[in-house]
Image 1: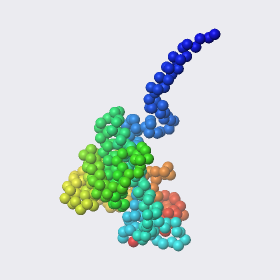
Image 2 (image 1 turned 60 degrees about the vertical axis):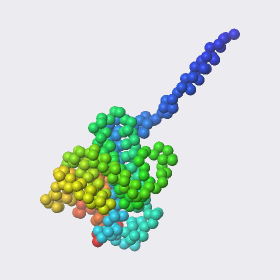
Image 3 (image 1 turned 45 degrees about the vertical axis):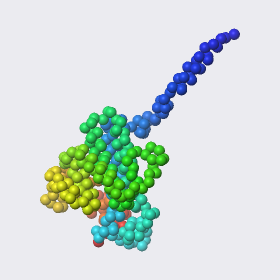
Image 4 (image 1 turned 180 degrees about the vertical axis):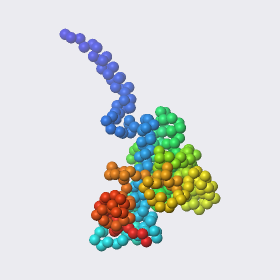
Length: 317
């Protein structure tokens, strides 16, 4: 008869081995696609994530016009009975919007998308040991400036909002109570002050186009102070911006020239939202809302495009 005297010992060894396994050993992340388990490791990862944190600025800009300009004397929509698809935007312009308005909801969600991306960057940077300190300083500065910007947009338009300062990792993290407006403003000022100390002055190079720098932060922080009627603290910030190399263009027409649209050509620009031409998802349809509906925009813009976006939606007053 065969002897099995070694089997109990083998079973004990297997049991001991599996009982000593760590959770990290059993948690496997798919390596064929980007995910948090394998991301946020290298400098390139964080730089890529930072670019993504700028993205929601576009979604805010696309909706800010309806909430801001159309409620002022600057612009108003043209009523077109056959096209009632823009009722939410018209309601905003007429001060008839309610809590279900899709435009205000989109702007709100876009700001929190940006905040969520920034918080993930900041939380992962705290434990990262591979990114050089000089680059960490830049990334933290831009991230905090973005978070301050997003919360400033929220508090001005929605009052007190939930104050998320860390990455949402579980359901309980997602449902924070609404903070008061004063608390949100305190955080905005804190983030912008931190960014001001970390970021360099503007370089006016094509490489840095669209990126936040000390000039951007000083200007926005001054605007925050003025929003709070704190003109005493706003004044030195605005004065500092005048020493950073910004200049008015001598030819006003150049401000609107596509060839002069970035900071390396136009030193009037302090902060602008960046897009790419083409149809790769990085483009903007903003300009088409300001011209009439027409089968081809070539005579107006020099670009062949069948415009169905303009005319009915807005007109300058």
